[in-house]
Length: 371
Ligand code: UD1
Ligand code: UDP
Image (cartoon, rainbow, N blue to C red):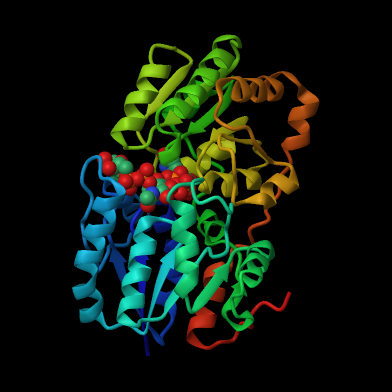
């Protein structure tokens, strides 16, 4: 029997770890322990409620307007005792959040092996996204297992010198999650409101975008929408108070733009599926929207997800008002340009990533990537 701790802390890693948790709980030779840092609160609780799970341990560290020092110090201080009490055989962390980084650091100090789910994503620029690029590279330094979502990510890990017998291509677990969230009969009052219009779905929350970059993105949206009567915007606004303030200052008072509270994950995936176009600085939406053939304008200067750019469904548009506005206008006004991007593609796997991860951890059935 292997004791496996699955770490979550924020909305995206919790969504993407849920399939792993569900799969491990089915296996007789695994004891699964869910450790939440509680870096997020309401947004994390919503994911747990949707999937009918609860953390076994919750460090509950979130404070309003927490900075990176708060998150790092509060997790590091409280996780030692919990990991020591659980005494796991392995700890899984996901992606690039500070929760994942700090728990992997604690495991390194305690000599506990770490499995990194969604390993090998890189921009190569430590400031973009900040601090996520640092977090994921740091986790990669100590991880025992690197679960890469794509061959591209695996190649990146090997090129950094990771040992080939530790790198596995599993697919991205978000595709597993999407198998149970997307519904043909999904309804929501905001989707009814947008019916008959072209729906532009927006999300924006990146730390490095807060302030002028976010204002640039949102001003571009307002201009593009005010000029076109058949476009409506739904923007589920992240709980970060700085993001909420900027969103309401820049987009408030426009009757074809609705700012709403964060959607639960079922809602978000179904809104994506009903959208004409998505504008986002989120990592997760870059992986999800291509499956629905929904073009994504990525309001960032870099992406660690080149697969979607290569496939043609993602386009990097920066954060300057002029560049975001021009990209929006092009897709809203030029049908040929739109059709070029609106092609369903899914470079992120077959929806069985969690099974592979469980196989690797429990019986080594699945072999490492061999290029
Ligand atoms: C974090 C991750 C980021 C990830 C994002 C997903 C880090 C450093 N950043 O960024 O990689 O893309 O989550 O959303 O790990 N808040 C609430 N309730 C919640 C969640 C957040 O009130 O449920 C507010 C709090 O005031 C908090 C602020 O939002 O201080 C920011 O949250 P934080 O976790 O620090 O950063 P994110 O921008 O969410
Ligand atoms: N998401 C959600 N509700 C929302 C916005 C996003 O459930 O209102 C989901 C989305 O489908 C994706 C994940 O949250 O699975 C992405 O999280 P986020 O954008 O917060 O973080 P990132 O992916 O950028 O790290």
